[in-house]
Amino acid sequence: MAVRRHRIAPRRDPELAAALHAIDDFSRWIENADTKAAHLVAILGTLAAGLLSQSARVSATWHYAAVGNPTPAVLLTIVLILLSAALIEVALALLPNTTPSGPTRLAFPWMAQQSGDMAGSTIQTREAWSHAQFISRRARAKLGHVRRAVGATAASSVLFIAWWVVILTLDTHQ
Image (cartoon, rainbow, N blue to C red; front, top):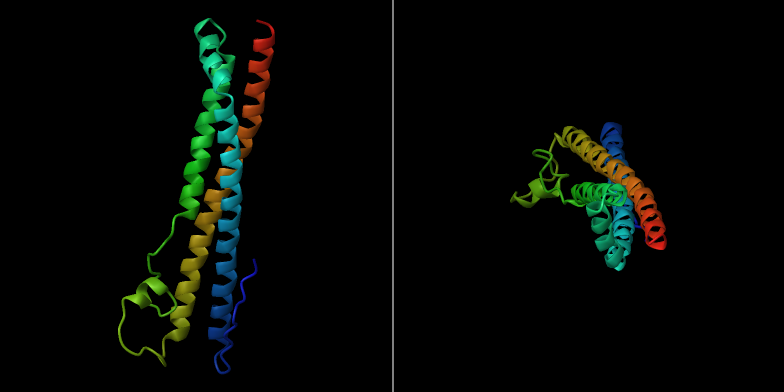
């Protein structure tokens, strides 16, 4: 679903226009990270459902470890650790941030605490660049969490398949 943006183009202050453009651009990176994190949640949910649907094989995994074949248990343990790590990273990426970027009318957490008319301030450009920097740092942090979650999700998916093949092979040789 596309979000319509209303561009603010101040006529007299090209520096302010550049700062507002940066805010808009960095906000899109945050939206991008949130979208990717939502896709990762779906993939992680599918992996969790796959594990839950194999509850008998999960039990057999621990049985094989007890009788001297730890391979399935090691694989499953790593899968569970990676799934947990991916879920933590996704949660950190999606965690709402209501920390203001400082005293600026462009940050809703700070603005929500203010009262009175603040229009026409002479520090608008400085506030805009301060907020743009804050948003860029938030985007960088979110994308870092998403990047780590993608790696953990990919590794856990591959190892889940490896575990499943190993456990099926062991089950057929019994």
